[in-house]
Image (cartoon, rainbow, N blue to C red; front, side):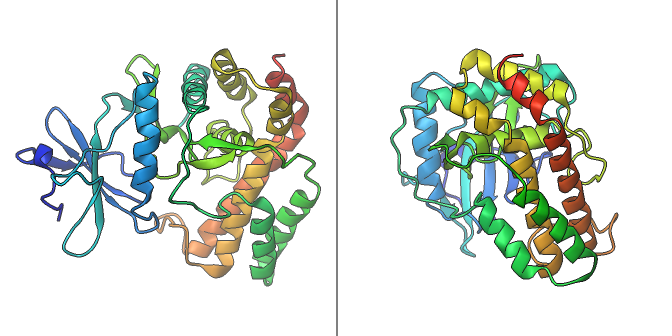
Length: 327
């Protein structure tokens, strides 16, 4: 039950949001919509709201559209229900949510939106209170996979992922900067005309290198098959459009271009390792019981798909680098 903590919500109708995320349960308040109300997953500490408030206040001061947390009646950023669950309310941003990057035009708008966000937070001074330690420590993910993998089909797939990581030749030394942390396309909000409006789902805000941030975005945006297919490919047309949109707002430095050329492969391998590890531990990722007999089977399928995507990105590394350089 949503706690009665916000005067701004009283009297407003509630309906479940059509675009439910993977972790937080979401409702829309008001007609026309005025607020998004969420029961926050326990994987996020309540202190994450201090981070969201700091970043969104900074974005708003720079003139960027952004959802803001609605304060409770006593001025808090969140509230608990009788069962102890954490709830929050945020401004509703009118617009569209996309679940795949179907056109280069959308990729270009997405790249420009992310660049506006990155440029706006370059001068932000904030120490994050909610930190996901090791979230993109790729080497550690590989070590954990090696330790978890025992035998059979999963071990063979794990060895292929580990071999690909051992021969990966990218760099890992870019400095951390303020990032969104989860730039799948459904976490970007667009106007009906296709213009990027703002970033949403802000629980993953963090300091991390830009190659991690954009490598994960491009891994997601440029694979038209999605994570549930082993027929993965890296769409260079979508990639080139995303890079062009970003670069028009915030040009890349020479070291960034070098690291970014290998970033999609790295993050695809990292996710492959995480899926494959869960095929042995069988406890983390959700799975589609209508398509797969077990979580293990689904995770092996997804791990194979991400390995295929990493291999595709490696084959096209020269073209990826050329487009990053403006070619």
